[in-house]
Image (tube, rainbow, N blue to C red):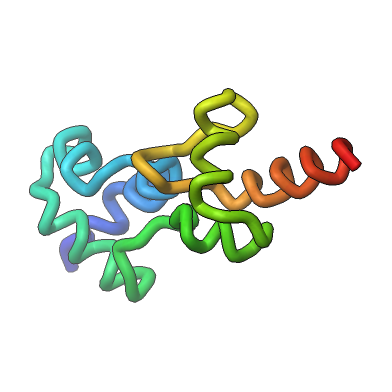
Length: 102
């Protein structure tokens, strides 16, 4: 029985996606199309989305406006992974930042 793309890449696709890479960037690095990368992620995980949060999700979790989140990014306090996508750890960074300022 031939191996599936998932078995060949052994988690590499998901790891790259979680780092904030686009489907195109992942496809280019492994020699597959972005559509095939999307299909593999959907087959294995049910979604092609990464574990990253959107700015809206972050703003809701920390009870701050999206403009506040973007202001923190502009000031270098937090760093986005990819165009408005954030690692979950950024929530703790923001909460700690405001806790320390009180």
